[in-house]
Length: 130
Image (cartoon, rainbow, N blue to C red; front, side, top):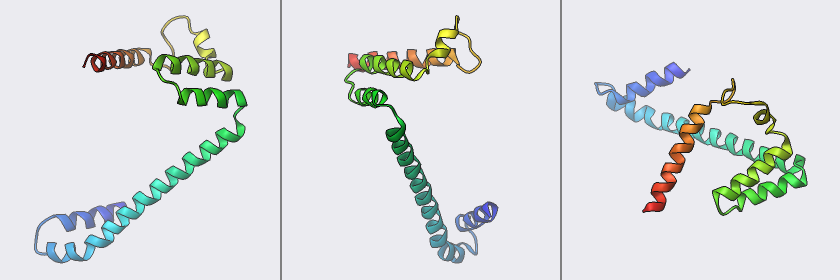
């Protein structure tokens, strides 16, 4: 089905004898189908995000809810980072950090994360210097 749509799409774009006829006939169905698929994907995304938010609200402990609210209202990165560390510790998501003695891990790309941190700090510094 995807190949057929691609062929029809190309037929409406490529100039030639049938370009005028096929372009006029197939333009609106292809455009409508494209908009319909985009709308469906957006609706599915919104439904999934709402489900996740409801699930977090129902199953989260009050302490975790409070920490998440504090993260949302944090005014600086340092305060947000401190609250995020508390949240990770309360959920037990920081146990892997305690077990790693050096900067190597099979599931964590330390060098890439360090590059990102350096880039973020450089960008923050350049923004503050303006």
